[in-house]
Length: 153
Ligand SMILES: [Fe+2]
Ligand SMILES: [Fe+2]
Image (cartoon, rainbow, N blue to C red; front, side):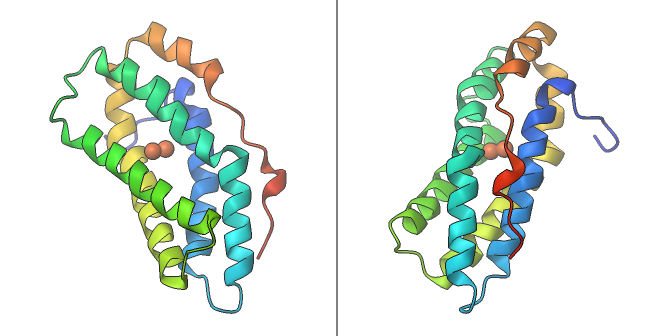
């Protein structure tokens, strides 16, 4: 699927992914010195659209994909959802101030791999199989992520 352009309906989700990759890099590179700042940056991202992104994928993208594809036992859908749970678990640990440095590294790695999986494997299949009218239905329902919370560390 290399070279396939992102469908305009999914471009907002791909923009969210760009932001997520910035956070993933910060998380993977977190040190004891900047751990608190990285946690703060993560919570900023998570509370200002990151969490919403997961909800949008689960409540719009997956159900409309399920209209045209058998999702039972679908390994890609299972991976997507399991990744979401694991990412949410680590996000909750950060929120409850239970996360250690290695948890930040794990979240960064997981987030990077998850975004790559969606961008390179899942989204190309989804955009070529979901009905055009369903893609159009979704498009205005994906939120615009505010970039103001992006702070250099
Ligand atoms: Fe996702
Ligand atoms: Fe995503």
